[in-house]
Amino acid sequence: MNKHSTPISELNAVVEELIRLWSIIAEADLELDLFTASDDPDPAQEKIIEYQIRSTAHPNFGGIETSDEGTIEQRIDHELKECALIITTAVKVYLPTPLHDLFAKHRSGALFEAEFNYLGLTAELRFDHVDEYIVISYFINAVHQLRLDAFTETLLRPNATALMTELLPYIPWFKYAAALADQTDDSALRAQLITDMNLVLAYLSKGGEVNFAKLRSLCDVTGSLQPVFSLIVKNMPELLDN
Image (cartoon, rainbow, N blue to C red; front, top):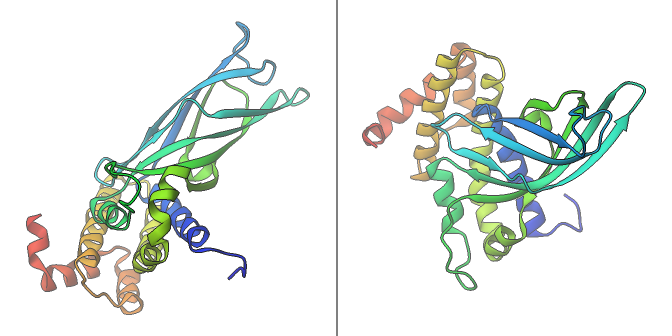
């Protein structure tokens, strides 16, 4: 660990990893419309002065919104007739309920009474080889850097260590689910994976214990989270009623 790290910098690292993994599972993607200073819509020849961006994710695993008001850095290669874009902008991530509640529990109410409706982030998005005025990319492929925005940092800083400690048990399951999600284009399999992950998150949030190392080997055999789903239903069947 970096000797100069602080609790909030360590929390930022955990949050960045969590959101990257979440975006893979939720298949979060971005659609970017580019606007140039002239009537020529070719971003490889003209300066881009504005953009509009739409963000989507699987509706049963949270949500994402990306601001149209970020800063644009454009690097044009006139010879190749393409450009690279770096957009730094605000991102709102609406986490699955158990994780949202965990963040909300650890926010500081000493300075602000505002409700905690989403996780506020600042993202640096990179789009390479841009040669059209419409760009489509998975969020995970575009995001270069990600951190809590200033307001959210202020809310979470007093309890950063406690929050990070409670987040860590979720990370192995996010890593495993993201690996499974990355291996399939089947929408039904992804939907089932998200159903299973929502149950895992609910179970962990209620203090349920799961031996990740043991269950991972069983999940490897099935290629799914079905073994952990079955264990949770056995130990806490009431979760299926929620």
